Length: 318
Ligand SMILES: [Zn+2]
Image (tube, rainbow, N blue to C red):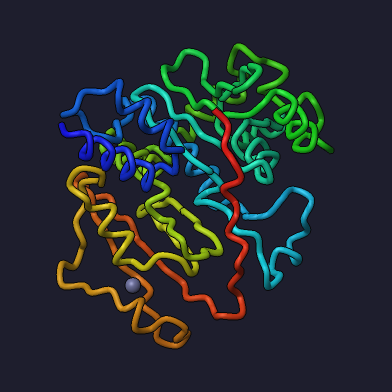
């Protein structure tokens, strides 16, 4: 492969992952040139990433202390897709840099808490955190899959303290039982584990989307991205890239996912209808080869809602 081809491969990968050029370059250099430039997750890894998106995909794009109504301000801060400044995809690991504003919310939604009386479990059952100086490893004991969060120990501890305010310690399973599942979590998975599990092929597709989440993002201000899962997966965003750009990226033969438009004749009208709230270009559906549907819904935003503050990329860690 020519040097210019290698450089293009690195740059294109960063469009999908948001990684710094040096990070993408380092990881690609370790891989064979005929391997896919964005590695697919192994089976258990894809299942964990699917659960992660199920719990986190509808995050609120606001700092922990900012009340909800203030987040409707005209000049909203811009965040990256799902609040992830970048992701680094590996076969048995996904590394993530979470925007610091959203870290307490991430801990609150993703790490499990249990109600010993009702047996209810919130977050990802069994998930535990191992804190290192520059990163935190999230994994479920007995399962071969992990999420590595790039964060300094002091920032993590600070975010944990905020997230746990008002919670009874005996509910916080991941702190009280750091090395094992609680009975409540085991029972919960036995009963409800089929939810948010799209079998091997469907999980691979959802994990593939997470590993390419920056394909949903460009230079244009986007208010939010929300992902919901039931029988179909719904991804909504407001402003930002058109369907056309997102679909082209997701269908790229080297960097994309294997998915086809449900209606091959569908045409994106986002550009012509920008600002037209009555007749926007709203909806397109992609289908992967397992038959799982991904609805792509783009909401228009008015000029008055736009912000020039898109400086979320304030330096990553790791
Ligand atoms: Zn469109």
